[in-house]
Amino acid sequence: MIDAGDALRAALARPAGPSSDFDLNPGIRPSADKPLRPAAVLVPVWLRDDGARLILTKRSSHLKHHPGQIAFPGGKVDPTDATPEAAALRETQEEIGLPPDRVQILGTLPIHETVTGFAITPFVGLVRGSFDPIPEAGEVDEVFTVPLSHVLTPARYAIERRRWMGVWRRYYVAPYGPYYIWGATARILRGLAERVGA
Image 1 (cartoon, rainbow, N blue to C red):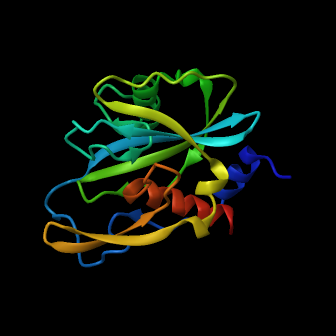
Image 2: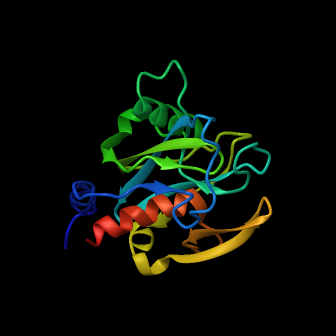
């Protein structure tokens, strides 16, 4: 059976198309005169004895951007961050207590443009050994894991829609138990699932 790390390395070596909140909504586009703000997230794959699992967060319901949503750990790239990768690792440590030296970065996924004006660079990283998440108070309500096999199976994804700013917006979803994985997080993961299965 192929190792999860090997499968991810092979997937990251395959070609990838663009990724954005607009893939399913060609009629909705951000303002051309408003530059996208750079952000970076970690797609942390935890290699455990009971199988590979993806670490995700449930954002605080009090946040300005994406309150209460399921998300990767990460955030805006600050001027003090040497690189987007450094930003992703810094934010991950702040949000869930995972030290950067515990993460082996395998590569990046396509930059994802969001409807809220961010250009997100996702970094896929492996985490080994024991880890006790520490949710950042006020930012993260919960840290949880999902079997990697769940999010790497294209059949787990569906397309749903809701009204947003007066128009219908379509988006990917990949629910797992009580967790409603959708929007940018689901789109990024679906892109990875397609490359794993290619």
